[in-house]
View 1 (cartoon, rainbow, N blue to C red):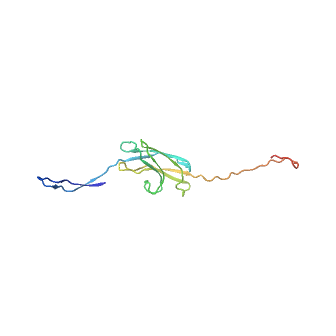
View 2: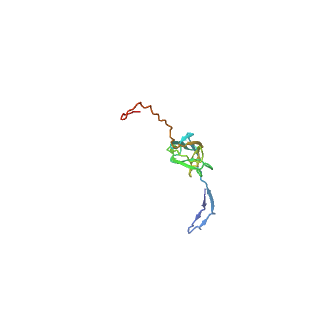
View 3: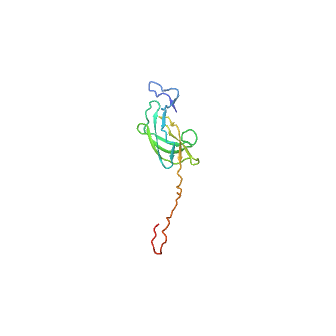
Length: 173
C-alpha cells in the first residue's frame, strides 16, 4: 500500500492572487485477485532415479480462468507454512496458456535422514501485485532408494569325468 500526498495550488494571475489548498494524505490500497493452485496427486511410491511428472493448474478464484506464464515451484516440505522457506526446492516449471503445468522431476531422496525416505510434495505460486500467492495440498511420497547390486549365489557343478583317461586324451566336461 502507498500514501499519496494530494493538494491543489493556483499560481495566480495579474488579476487573481495565488492560493493553495490543505495537504491531504490519501492511502492507496492495491487489490489483488486470489488464486487456486491445484497439484494432481503424484504416485505414493517412486524409485530414486525415476522421472516423475507433476501436473496441475493455477487459476483465478473469481472466474476460474487459468493463469498463463507463471512460475510454479515444487517443494519437499520440511517445516513452516508451505511457503518454500526452509523447504527443499525440487524443481520449477511454468504454466501454459490455460494455466496448466507439467513438470518432470528426476527423483532423489531429499530427506535421506529418514528411513524409509518419506517426502511431502506440494506446489507453490509466489504471487504478484495482481495475483495472490497460493499453495497446493501436500502429498506424501515414499522414495525407494536403490541399493548397490549384491552378488548372486551360484553353484558350479562338474560332471563326472570319463574313467579311465589316458595321458594325451582330450577330456570334455
